[in-house]
Amino acid sequence: MPFVWVDTETTGLNGPQHDLLLAIGIILTDDSFRATARIERYIRPEDWDVMLGLMSPVVTDMHFRSGLMRRLELHGEKMSRVEGEICDWLDKHLGRTVDMPITERPALAGNTVGFDRAMLQGCMPRILERVSYRSLDVSSLKVLCYATAPRAARWDRGHPKQHTPLADLEDSLDELAHWRQALRTAP
Image (tube, rainbow, N blue to C red; front, side):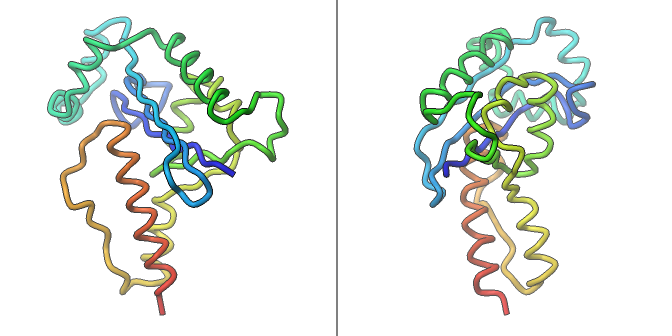
């Protein structure tokens, strides 16, 4: 069963009722968590002033430093177009359609993936039609490891967080490997 790893970049952390979706990245992995395909897309906001008004100074600075603002300007597309591209991409790579039983759809995976699922539900719900209601959340494994194996090594990505969807997903896959190993060796 493949996993659909998703990461979004947004104007904040308040969810789709308040914030805008700015970028999305997806990595498909096999059941051994090896990447088999990846895609990253940028959503051009309809009104740049509204977008900037939603972001705190910290988020604005983060998105400028990561290059996201420049990518939005150069490569951003309408939300509906990005959603359609990603749905077509998922259908092609998964060989699946929305008509398949929910039990045969891949789980959504990521780091604090509930936030990303909520953003997709509010902004790109057709993507969620292609995945299961089940989730694999790396942050839950971290909490489990801290609770059950407090002596387990802390995870260090070894570099500053990049705040781009695909880079953050690569970090999540590395972190997953770390927590899986820590739980295996926990006393």
